[in-house]
Amino acid sequence: MDIKVANLHFTYPTGVEALRGIELKVPAQSRVAIVGANGSGKTTLVKHFNGLLRPTTGTIHIGDWKTSDYRLSQLARRVGYVFQNPDEQLFKPSVRQELTFGPTNLGFSSEQIQARVDQALELLELKHLAEEHPADCSFPWRKRIAFASVVSMDTPIIVLDEPTTGQDARSVRLFGHVVDTLHQAGKTVIAISHDIEFVADHFDRVVVMYQGQVLLDGTPAEVFQQEDLLERSLVHPPQLARLAHRLQLGQVVTNPEDFIEALANEQTAQRGKD
Ligand SMILES: Nc1ncnc2c1ncn2[C@@H]1O[C@H](COP(=O)(O)OP(=O)(O)OP(=O)(O)O)[C@@H](O)[C@H]1O
Image (cartoon, rainbow, N blue to C red):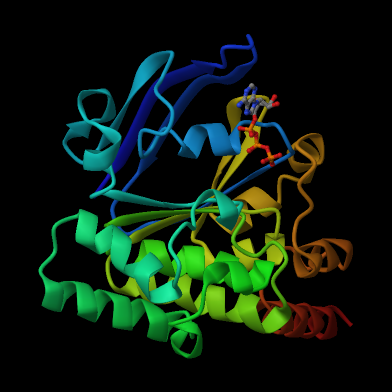
């Protein structure tokens, strides 16, 4: 299901002009990371996708739905939103009930609900906590529960706001695996993230925001070579990309395999010159 944002402006009641003319098209089954400095408008933008915020001017289409024509509860069928702070999201007395709430509200049959809840518990490795109260779990686990409670809704689009904050390396790897699995299942995953290695490893497209506008939009390789513009938006390319740049390897690399290949190519080229 495509997302189309046209000339989106949003001003908070306080007068802060948070979005200033956003144009964005996200085709179905995309993996898009939104990066940028604090206050650049990332959260304000994604909150428009599921109707948590409504445009001051401009339009958003989710598939054939213009969001301004639909209620929040209707948009929840198409866009699942995982809050940055899980405590804004979790309110049920057990993890299982938390995961059951969304699909129940969407009107799935009890068998479908059971299947979705079991899949989400399995995918996010939460089975052992199914009967626990979310409030008794630590912050990283509450974030994981919040993530699972949106996965269980089985929406075609999932938005993650800073998913890896506070997570250890193992959980970051798991979250990356979940992003890849959702993508393979045909879903669009959009993540706001300051974790640039996570972005480089699991997303095909990077949108850089700056002062309420889209500053850069492209593949990780295209975006990470724009060092000057990234500097302005306080985004640091992944360490490997910076190292490759310092070594003048002549291409943008974001993973170890590409780095080794680029280094080997460079050495071969050097030997050819000697
Ligand atoms: N509820 C609000 N009321 C008034 N102004 C707000 C509100 N939420 C955000 N803002 C302002 O809108 C601008 C964009 O904020 P937003 O949270 O969208 O940025 P962000 O890029 O997501 O930042 P962060 O990385 O810190 O989450 C900022 O100037 C922020 O102070």
